[in-house]
Length: 231
Image (cartoon, rainbow, N blue to C red; front, side, top):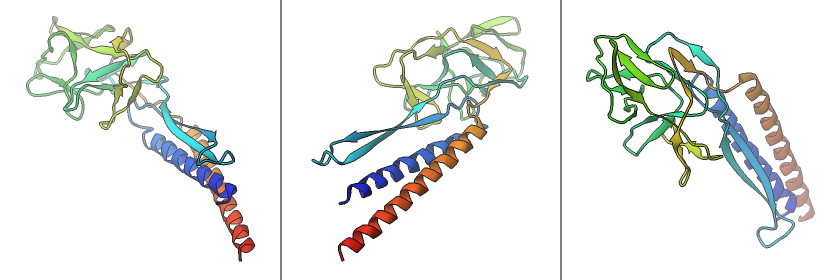
């Protein structure tokens, strides 16, 4: 097959994936604690036993920069100022999250919006849903009615690219990545906004769509020329 066709197909595929990543970022602009995904691609020559062919390897990585902390005034809204994650229990193991919009069950268990228990350091703390007056300090220590309840667990994964998205909307540590205690500041009554700048994402989206269209036009032109030469 014509080398130009290989390369235009590779370009179209890469830019289609780029559009999907950017679209996901835009869709999660209002999702608390969301971290935008970055699309990465690079070419590898010499595949298919032909040094003229070029394969485009694509992938994604997380932009873990912190989003803006927005005041909500709710006692169970928590945000992290600094590197770190809250830890949730799940059926498939631990989930790391920056989304700190929590609530209490009738039994006094602190859970995420989808009902997964928040982990504590040591024994799980139980709160009285009828009393209120919950105070949480910068280190994650929880007090209710002047009595200590426990300390919320906050961890960090210091390895570069040590975390990846899971299928619950949170994150998990990659195999072999270190999980350590975090010194991030727990901020009560705040939520962390997504680190997505909508205007920047729209500019990237337009560029990706134009690149896809250009590659598609090049493919059609090469294909038409190829057909005429082989009539």
